Amino acid sequence: QKEVEQNSGPLSVPEGAIASLNCTYSDRVSQSFFWYRQYSGKSPELIMSIYSNGDKEDGRFTAQLNKASQYVSLLIRDSQPSDSATYLCAVNDQGAQKLVFGQGTRLTINP
Amino acid sequence: DARVTQTPRDKVTEMGQEVTMRCQPILGHNTVFWYRQTMMQGLELLAYFRNRAPLDDSGMPKDRFSAEMPDATLATLKIQPSEPRDSAVYFCASGGTGGLTEAFFGQGTRLTVV
Image 1 (cartoon, chains in turn green, brown):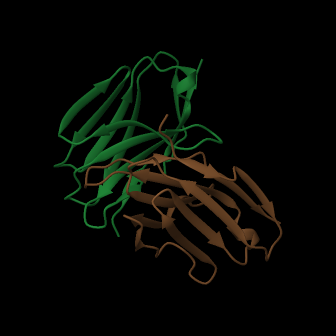
Image 2 (image 1 turned 60 degrees about the horizontal axis):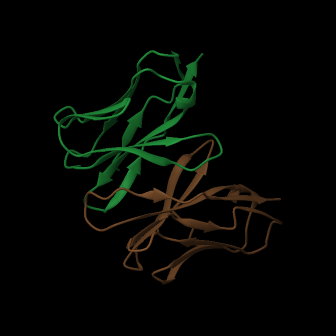
């Protein structure tokens, strides 16, 4: 069973600080990695995709991928209360052609 | 704008009744996923289709759940008979072809079985 592991949190970060969310995965051949944000009572929303080792930046968000360590992370700079949500890491299972999701990390940004 | 559309948004039903949830994937997407989300279990994959053909439905209780794609614009998830433990939010998501594809979620159907 291919697995994606995340710390369930809750993770509390003061407003304006950097929030760091981490994810590890078991399938060594995975090539595609995604971060979804889910507000309470809403559906998951795709916020970042990353396919190559290194960093990918989009506004205040940076995704980092290290395939050798089977590790993907999401950094949120200048955290805002509106960033408070559950963040889901997803990894593409190449063989089964489906996404495998972690359990999600609940993030709270404190004003 | 392109989005996955699910109906109904909310459904309250009595135990033993049939429930049908519908999903319209994003036009051009050929992969459709059905997920169930509860506080305890998180996001569970129930079934998924590519080009309308079922690829895997091992996540579904076979005796009461069924999923179909009668055409490229409609996917259905049916529960018969429904039970209180089926109460959850059911999400449909769609994606394109290829191994790198991401998935886009619909708004979900909140099902309550009493």
